[in-house]
Image (cartoon, rainbow over all chains, first blue to last red):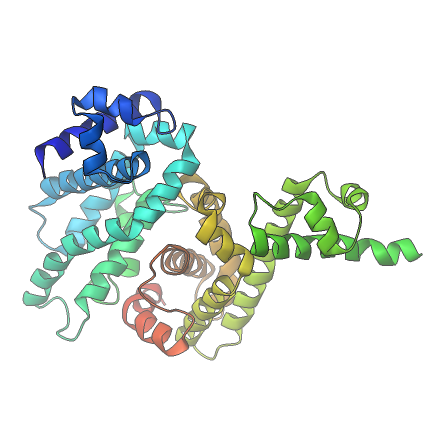
Length: 192
Length: 193
C-alpha cells in the first residue's frame, strides 16, 4: 500500500476512535495524518464517506491478518476453524473502537459493514481456499467438491457466528467442535 | 354490533397499508397521513388503534414475521423427506423475502432501517426467535434440540445469502437451491439422526 494512503487510513482510524464517525471530518484526518486535504481527496475521491468505508475495510483486513498469523500452524482446516472462531469472537468483543462505534453510531456502522460484506467475505474465502486445497490433497475432501463455493459458504457462516453467535457459545470447545465438524464442514470434510 | 365487525379490519388494514407505503416511499418518508389514506380511514381513527407510526411499523413487522414463518413451516412439514423439507424451507423463505416490496425498498434505499435489527447483538435475538419459529418444520425427522439447531442454521444461511448485498446464489430457484443445500448444508444438519 502507498505510504500516504496508509498514513491517511491510520489518521482516520485515530479520529474515529476519538470522536466517532459522524463527527470525524476530512480536516481532522488531514491534521491527524499530516497529509494535506488535497492529497486526501486525490486518494479518496468520494471524500469522507469513501474514507470511512475504506478505513473500516482496512481495519477488517488487519483483523484477519492477525488471525492468520496466530493460526498458521493449524494441522488442517477443521482445527484452524476450531481455533479461529473463539479467537475472532473475542477480538470482536474486545475491539474498543468497534464496540464504541456500535454503541454510539450502530446505524452508520451496520450500513458500512453490509456494503463491505462481499469484500470481507471475498477476502476470508480467498484465505480459506488454499487450506481446503491442502486438505483435499491429503485426502480429506472428495475430488468433486466445489472448493470455491465451500470456501465462500464457510466464510459467510463463520462471519455470521462471530458477529451474532445467537444460541451458540463460542467459548465452549465442544460446541465449537460440533459447529465446525457438522454444520460448517459436514458436507465436504469426509471424516469430519 | 357494527363496531365489532369494523374494528378488526381497520387494524389489519393499517398494517397492510404501512407495508404498501414503505414499499413505495420508504420508512422515513411514510407519514401517518399516508397510512390513513392507504387504509381508507382517518388519522384520528388510526390513533384510536395505535400510539403512532412506530407502533404501526412494529406490529406490521411482527405480523409479517409470523406470516412468513407460518408459510415456511408449512412448506417444510408437507415435504416427504428431510432434504426436501430443508429445500422447501429455504426456497419459501427466499421467495417471500425477495418478493417483499417493503423489505426490498428498505434494503436498497434505507439499509440502516433493517440492518440494525439483523447485525451483531440484535441479530442474536432475531436468529434465536427465527430458529425457534422454524424448528417445527423439521420435528418429523429430528429431535427437538436438533430441529432448533437446524432452524437456527438455516436462518443464518438465509440472512447471509438472501438479505445481504451481492448474493452469489439464487435460492428462489428450487434446483439451484437443492444442488447447493445438498452439497454443503444438509449433511451438516442430519449428523446426529
